[in-house]
Amino acid sequence: RLPVCGDGIVQVGEECDDGDDDDTDECSTKCRLAVCGDGLVQAGVEACDDGNQDDTDRCLSTCVLATCGDGFAWAGVEACDDGNDVQTDGCLNDCSLPTCGDGHVYADVEECDDGNLDHTDACLNSCQAARCGDGVIQTDIEACDDGNLDNTDDCLVSCEHARCGDGFTLLGTEE
Image: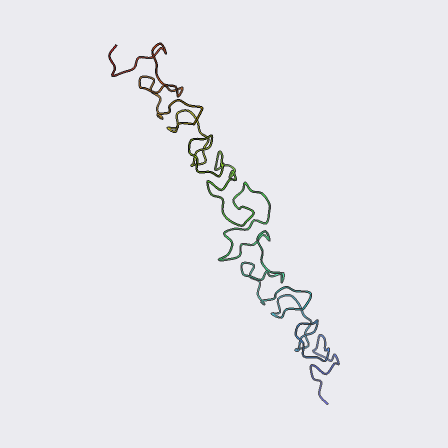
């Protein structure tokens, strides 16, 4: 009798032979030991096995399902995945790219990010820190802010209204 894969006897050319037709156990129906990457999901050992080494699809080359935080960007699902839990770098913990207004200060790009749409507070909607001279009046801090360095108009460079006795002459007015 000729050796046959599946007869339960390991013979020359076979890595294993468990005598069954179950491809989800340790020995395939081709008498090969189950390994990650063979395209067969080994029950209880592998979550997936798509038979490739592509780490940007649903199944990683380690035979685990892709998830946010695994260090591989899942194509079409995640915008990024740096595998860390730092919220100030180029990839947020939810695998999205940082944007102005998301409430996280993107290091070396944003000065601030308060995550709101209030343009008159300490952080502008451009994620730059509000300051006198930026052209935006900060509520309860600045009386005016015309965005220029001219002390001869209605708003001084100190973001206070021009007034009599402030040491500046208001141009275009009669004395």
